[in-house]
Length: 191
Image 1 (cartoon, rainbow, N blue to C red):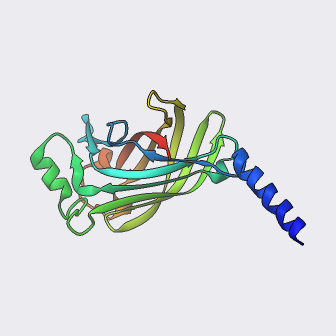
Image 2: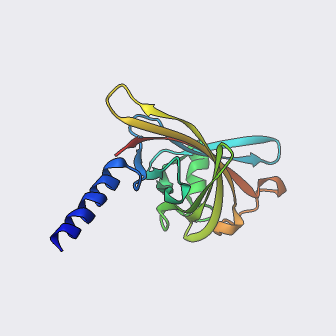
């Protein structure tokens, strides 16, 4: 009996030691300004208005060999919205748009990650303005490897699109401004 327990324990430790059973988890490096959550939306169909969320945090799990182990969890402080125009930012934080007093946080939690060629398809739920809707992101591995400080990093860029009305943002900005495009670039440090 003791022999079987020791064999089982040894096998389990070898599996853990090999790293075969565990995906690597990374904390998004926002402190070093190596991560961005941005968006763009057409302004009257004449130009693009760009914005960013300056305060967010999150983690992602990445296993190059098995995407079923991958996941993403990001929380965004909606009041940190910045479009480089104070009056517009105040308006966008208000009840007609993000309603940041009532919904100070947005969150994206992945439900599935698939590899398609060299790219990744990340499906998950985005909670924004008190509404949760499915969102799909197209992602690319930017790179991975050791950093000069003894850590290990991985970076991704992802894009997607959200319909404003799906998140209870009903202000009419014109026919070309019904969707916002997401542009996300993150670098994570393995924890």
